[in-house]
Length: 208
Image (cartoon, rainbow, N blue to C red; front, side, top):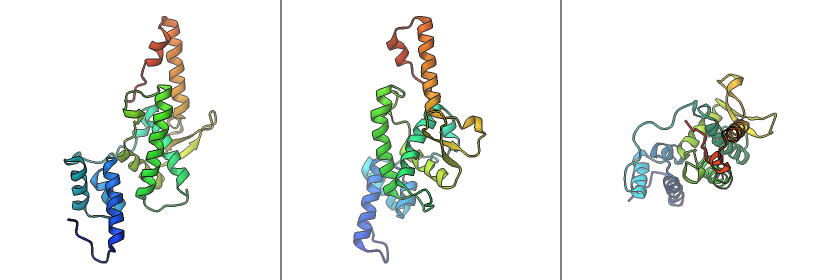
């Protein structure tokens, strides 16, 4: 059984446990659940073990501040998620991340990439096209709230993309334009080498 914290109403605590369990089922690691839901470390670990029949991954949480700059696809997925998150969250709000907003934004992100990115074959190497893990999504929100990153509008395609404020302008290029430029480059190369269209379309973009 779970011990009810002092001065906590039972309905509120049950709601918190329900929220924490939803996060667990999405694969959120115990330290993040503890932060989002305000529950104890032991409770978060126990919920995770009961849902996944084992302990969570060991080691540090996703902390690479430059992850979005590692590849165009990383930046593309991060931009999709943070664009959605910004749309459902008042931009002037500097409150800590709420579990409901994280889950809503991630669910919408998963739906978008499942329908669009897999359909256009921009990323067929990941489950349902999802390159962005929910734990890393939480870290992106932390960066955004601390003003380490921001959403910038592309002057060419008018889409919003996530950029790191610590990087020079050269590294703040639009990932959508970058991905399509690389895809068009493969098409031209395929035409030059005489590859069939299917071989050119199935050539994957590196995510490393």
